[in-house]
Picture 1 (cartoon, helix red, strand yellow):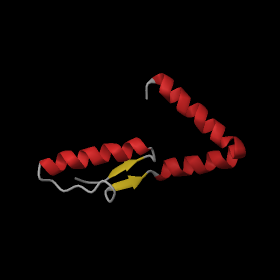
Picture 2 (spheres, one colour):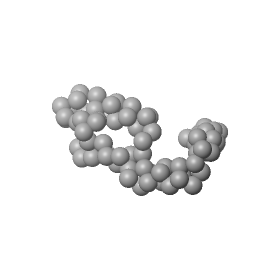
Picture 3 (spheres, helix red, strand yellow):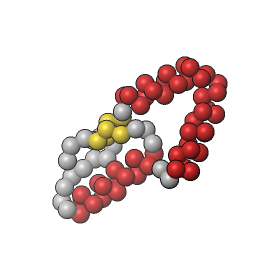
Length: 73
């Protein structure tokens, strides 16, 4: 198994832990922490939004999360 580049959502941690469990049953070693690479583009995007929106950035994130929930993501 190689490396996974994912955004910083906690559900990605859970997914990789489940994958590690499944692979372990198959006799394959996979480290869900060591083989996960954070997406630099996502990190830069968050920094730029913080810079642009400042104090309103937390409100922006809450709106974005609510939109994803209503869309089924």
